[in-house]
Amino acid sequence: MQVGGVYNGDHNNLAPRIGVAWDVFNNAKTVVRAGYGVFYETIIGNIPGNVMLNPPYLPDFFNSFPFASWPNAFAPSGFPVLTITQQNLRTPYAQHFNIGVEHQLPGRMLLGLAYVGTTGTKLPRFVQIDQAYITKQQIDTLVPDVVTRMELIGIPAPVAEQFLNNNELYGQMPSIVRTPYFGFAQLFRAQDSVSSNYHSLQAKLDKRFSHGLSFLGAYTWSHSIDGASVFFGSGANATTIFPQNNYNLAAERGNSDFDIRQRLSVSFNYDVPALKRLPAVLGKGWEMGGILTVQTGQPCSVLTGESLSGTGLGNDRPNVAGDPNAGPHTVQQWFNTSAFVLNAPLTFGDAGRNIVVGPNYRDFDFSLMKNTAVGEKVNAQFRAEFFNIVNHPKLCPPQQYPGCSEFWHALSNAGRRTEQRRPGLGWSPADTVCA
Image (cartoon, rainbow, N blue to C red):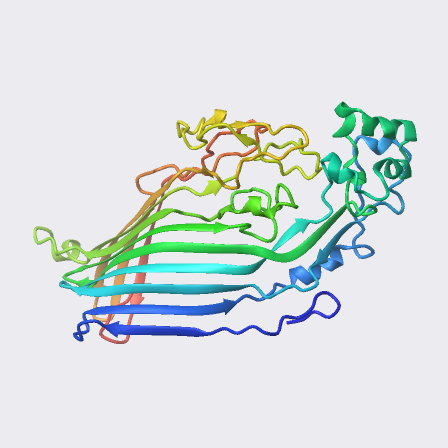
């Protein structure tokens, strides 16, 4: 697809796919399967559509505190904030590959074991390509020089020179005068610079319905890594989608927002045998079902909530001084509070992205049903369903800003037990009764 005038089209996308299956012992009981495929993603319309966020469609100007009291150099022709698109934006694609073995067991059961992987290439993200410089070596390369720039925005030359020559004031120069593209406050660019990979070991045990029982158990051990997990808005754990340092995207590579290392899911349905000691209308037609889900926590990043780096973006991460996941794991303090220290002024923190693992997740939903035949074609059903029947709290990832009053806390999302009971009436014109 090509959007005229916004970016060049990508017209060499091939998507080969192949799959094989092998009956190992030629008895239809043990089968090995493998597959590989390339799958392309559509470039969502919001990416080229973001050009409509630019002036004159949507004016967006920059006024840097505390210089609001200086001569108003930003109005009516202030420094605009622009959104642009990479000229040669490529079509993002994923490669899926897997190999697995399945074996039929007695009792109508099937055991499966598989390796499943995915890689993502040319995935889109936003970066701020006009990020303010923070080192003297970078600032000395700017044209025009920063003193001239400060004069242009209304800061008198003597004051401007003090910013440049005083080490204490050096980092307080307005970020607008330290950008490589002077005249623009911010330049947000959509580009295809993200790659990802996912590797997993997946096992399942599936029992088809027999003797009144069916169940399915699945276990996944996996790891997902990327440079950004979302394109718009906030990450899955409320962290910013923009890099800490837009000139060092390699530092953003880390655990995906949705990286769940281990997950176990078990579901079952059981027809309870007739209770002979009770009248038939009470002792027959009982069913039980349930779903158990257990998984490790989602990762999250810790941000300082300050802009000590001097970029003006507010995406600073702290420095790491210990193991952040060695904390007491309580609601009041989920992770190690002493594992982070603020980054020094005009530097970036060395904490990686998504290095804190949030609370685990456990849930068990249970249902109890009573079926009563009314004549030959009607079935009345009473169903009682209990969600989170063990009443286990479900905790959200901890707050990641030290300035927040709930920093370090793992907040409850009110995961209380809920119940619902409802009668039902089913009718079938055939012999099979449904509810």
